Image (cartoon, rainbow, N blue to C red; front, side, top):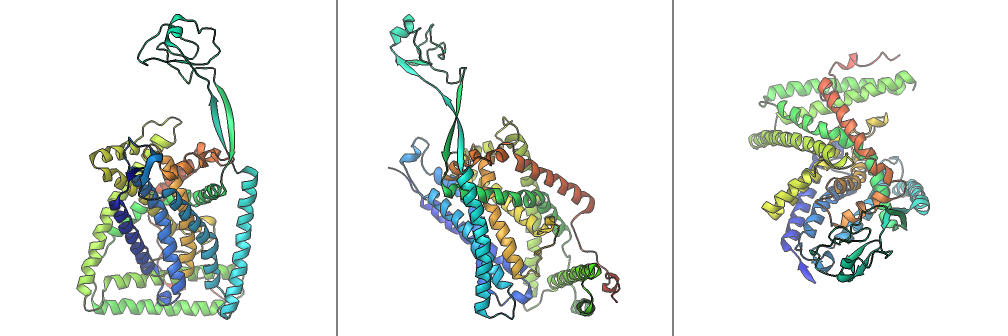
Length: 527
């Protein structure tokens, strides 16, 4: 066996995995509500691990490429002793994804939101019942679909060929042969003036000479591959919306954060004055909530409740912003410097986000949407970078894959589930309850297979030969019922349409902000 083992690749993998884990912990701390800071440790661990797994899933694609490139191109892939068993790792990651999305995270959500009056055993029992019902529903859908249409259909072209003596071919004595294509047994550079049907003027076979005989080759895929395909389709329904919003929302939001950064700290007296105003508004909101408890739950009551919830969100955001412009503690000056440095890093990230967004859109238009790609575009760039230094291409490839996940997460944080008409589990810095973390983490985890599938389609030239491309490029794309969605690029057109609408919306309205006004002006009078 030829050796393609690479200890440096393992070291880079471990470091990258640790950085992703640290980033997910930071997101949890940055977004957590103060009421959840020192409790609900088990849900927090599950959320961090789930979010980390989602990002790891996307970054495993560049790892798969690097693992494939560990062997020289002159060595057959089947003869190489690879650094990592990527096929087994992919199956493990997708199965873990499935278990977390449809079993562990739902159970955690049901347990966390159980009635506080329930005992621990009652919470466990109720959570198990709800999770079991949800799981049975999902399993029935997957099993029924697999039994009915769990097949791939490959279009195949029938060809026949034969071998003949060069002297016979040159003399034309094989003219009456039924063979579709005669390949002479001599130096392929030898030319011939006579050839049978299907052979070129040089005596060699042309596989595409009409008439062609096309047949469909139908095979049943493994249940594991079919589950991966279903995960990808479900994730695409979320990914096309959230990434469509995030491709524009990410650079715009980061730019507005940078331009709207505080220029200086406030004094302690100013801090106390603003804190007192927030406290007065909080008291007024509490009085409104007391009135709502005594009111009839009609349409007017629901409207007032929604306005009250909006004002609570305003208060939480004001408190969060106030704490940022008045760093407290003995190291307040150091915290302020780091705080401002973070804004300049964010400004650089915004610039890079614009570049990545527009190159992604250009790549989709040039390579993925046309029946015949106009240009390999980013594929060519990665190959060129690999020629300069082997890791440069993989690094650029990783950045583009990771940016898709970042854009999808940003779109999720900006929108939540508002596109489903109802406002469900919003994500807000410093004001996010654990239930919102659980739901949105499940959505992010569900999107990760779709992102991998999209990257496999977008970078088919560069990622050819990888373990995951064999699944998404050679099997999922030919599944009955699913192949038409991918072959017609339905998801990509929908995502680009949402990206265009998001750009128009933000150009005319800008980033969505709460309108600030006095609480008493925000509510209808309650009898």
